[in-house]
Image 1 (cartoon, rainbow, N blue to C red):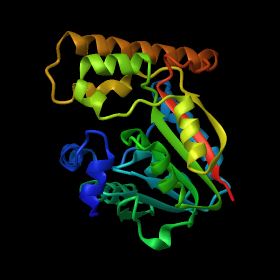
Image 2: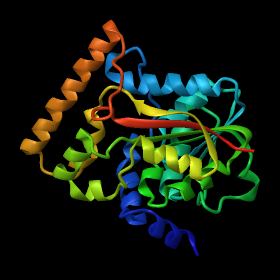
Image 3: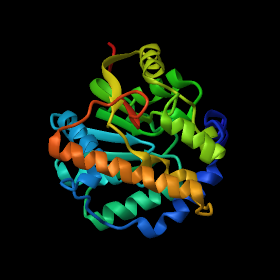
Length: 273
């Protein structure tokens, strides 16, 4: 089965054309910029970057699966210039953007344009740290895609998975109401689903749980190429509420993430031997 058929059968209702259009619209964003981790408005990014940095610091080789034009991969390469950094994606348009960003950021990373289900053989079992963000929730057979991703890790490697927390949450409810196409492009998973899928795929779970107190900005895709009406106004007010919460957290301490309002689920695991 060729790459296009495999991906279009595996992903819920996204298509090669949809993603190509998405990355095509982001060409103007392929520039070098730094995210101020001290700005409370970037609190979710800082929490993620801190979590990754703590896991990566003892590792030598890192790969992001479904890297797209990943900003966090650029920042990891900038922070850890001694590491071997790779980004893998199946879309040439995404790989081209990532190469541009790496060049403009003056960081060293290798971009691989390949299908995660049939990558170059030399990549299998190669990496100390394998990560994916917002990838696996586009697949119905969650254990199979996690197993495919885990094959990139060596026997002492770590597999880091992040997905949006949409199942029976405020984000899933609003997404379904505001843009059914975006909603249908995701398969709804919760913590228990992610834990079970990791176990079925032969991964030993180190930790798995909700991440960040809130982030209504994650619903921005619902309004891409849409007229800005009352729903968009309500969305903007919710993003301001998230920023207020982050400001309070930056002053008084982090709020424990709760199932209904946490925007993300993370899972850290290791291959079983």
